Image 1 (cartoon, rainbow, N blue to C red):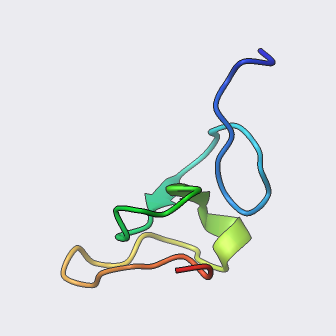
Image 2 (image 1 turned 135 degrees about the vertical axis):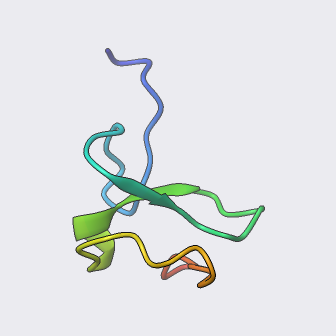
Length: 53
C-alpha cells in the first residue's frame, strides 16, 4: 500500500518487532530492532532514544 506510513531510519513500513523513541518530538517515532542494532527491546525501566535524538 503506497499510503502506508513509513518509519525507522530505513524509511520502511511497519514489520517485525519495533521500538518507539522516547522523544515525543521524534520525526520517525518507531524503529525496527535490526536497524538500530537491537536484538530485543530493553527493559521498560530503560528509556530508549533513537540515533537522531
